[in-house]
Image 1 (spheres, rainbow, N blue to C red):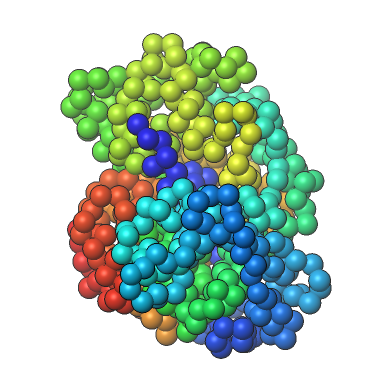
Image 2 (tube, one colour):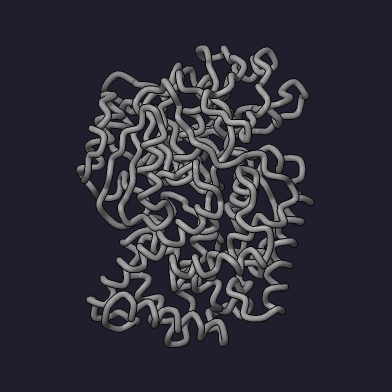
Length: 522
């Protein structure tokens, strides 16, 4: 099976978060104006400081120098952005890596189409060069320059760095369903050590990698690309980034597609619990299908019976990890769970998951380990992309932590286990990753309305594991110009995943500016 499909969009198990920002009014390219208070601001949601327009002007008027990327058909450049938008004249900058593939024609060029794969922490450049720039519909690539960037803190853009490869190997194996005080202490220590490493190696950028910061960078990118409006397709967390942009710069919104949408109004605890329920929904679909296959390692019967057998498998590898061929990384419960979750993002991975589970149950955990490695973006040489480091840095800045400590997790465990008998406990404990973060959150959950923006297409998949369908309905309802497009299906996100109905509706919107009717279902 082609595991690259698993990485077309990046979701996050340790849930994505909402944020706090203000609306703003804007001029044309290179003409930034100071932010104005959003009419929806409340006393508990204070706006971030308004950027200084004069100090921002050099950033908006910079010229990109394009060079060969070493990837056929693509060009690369580097954009400067202020490290701190509250003090853009300080002289401290971050480098934002950008890549593009120019419109292929025929037909009139429509501008740039910026794409983001999600995360937070997913590499936009990797996504563009491996998929979007060559795999988006030919008609779209003909009319748009396909563009992406690594958001600040990610991969090529002043990356957040935390643990090295060997330390990450250990971190990913820590038991996230602690059975006794010693295991609880070990998990707390792991979170503290991870946070401390991020502070030690990346303290300069940690306070400045919020979604609001990335959205403001995206407006700089729009300007330096020469576009009056931003045309954008964001998947998973990329929908939060896109909605944030629209709320900050509503009059600069062009054609925005938000696929696999998040709900910015929900606080971190609720987002994590919703996502836990989403993975349970996705697993139920897998379980029903598995029980009908001759090679299902979890046996026959209904989803409850299949789930009980998977839970028993997790219990066994928790007590006695399975060999993987790497003596330093046996398959324990943590890696096994991550491997299963990775495959639930895309139903085309179900056959691979059946095979990996069957092998693990017979003493070979290498298949599930490979799936877990694909989720963590671990290379064969033991090096990790900085996905998980950037993921934590953005999430922990965007919202206060879901939990104040282990005692708070204890209180929430019953609701998580109700949401998912299989994954609930592990995902509840995983949501404690921001508890010990060294930088205080600058954002909070709040409604995003983007009042006055052009029509924005919000896409939801009914059995999406990582971004539950109800989030898409919520975001479409919040956005002043949101229109909901529904895919009745499995897997994470919908565009480019096999539905002609979805693809036709989105392509028409991108090419002709005609949004699908609100509530359209495919």
